Image (cartoon, rainbow, N blue to C red; front, side):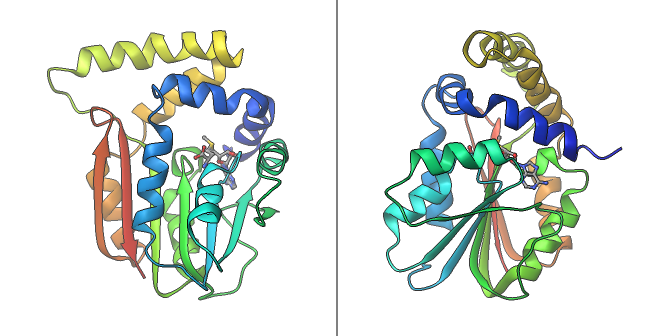
Length: 227
Ligand SMILES: C[S@@+](CC[C@H](N)C(=O)[O-])C[C@H]1O[C@@H](n2cnc3c(N)ncnc32)[C@H](O)[C@@H]1O
């Protein structure tokens, strides 16, 4: 059974509290990673950018603030998340669109950059989405992906595991009032590709100059590449 309908419902349910929970859970570091994403997307002036799984719109809005004269599209399949995005960024001319990352409603070779935060963990097959992103990117266009990464088994592992196993679901119930959504975050992170295998998937989808950097004690990864 596809993960899609359950994931969509989950984000529809937590949309109103999503941003607060993000700030609390990451100790306020989440915007710093999103800025890193924007930098890795390269120069998109006078071009077009797609922020997929845009959710409540933070990455799209950072593009809107930092890049003038670019068409910025923020796309997501959760209408409640998109409603929050629209409400938060009324002053920006971002084009918000509802769509599924597995099957993008865009022509081939159109975007100068495609970004996404915390998408791939939520889809059935990351490679399908990466190939779809490859299709819509213009030659030379950049892909940048921000997501959680399973922690490495080093000296810090037991502490990180405790935070994921108990801390995040507890915060989820207190701040977002939805423990199960944040228990899902923990489970989907632990089951997700490690950073090196995800880089290999980027290469398999056709991307070149693939690289990545990890943050937050190795629990966050940002991958990028070029079509
Ligand atoms: C954790 S939120 C991330 C939101 C935003 N990128 C950020 O940085 O905060 C994940 C988003 O991915 C969206 N999503 C998950 N699977 C999707 C799919 N197949 N197609 C489109 N959006 C999807 C969800 O609706 C949700 O808004």
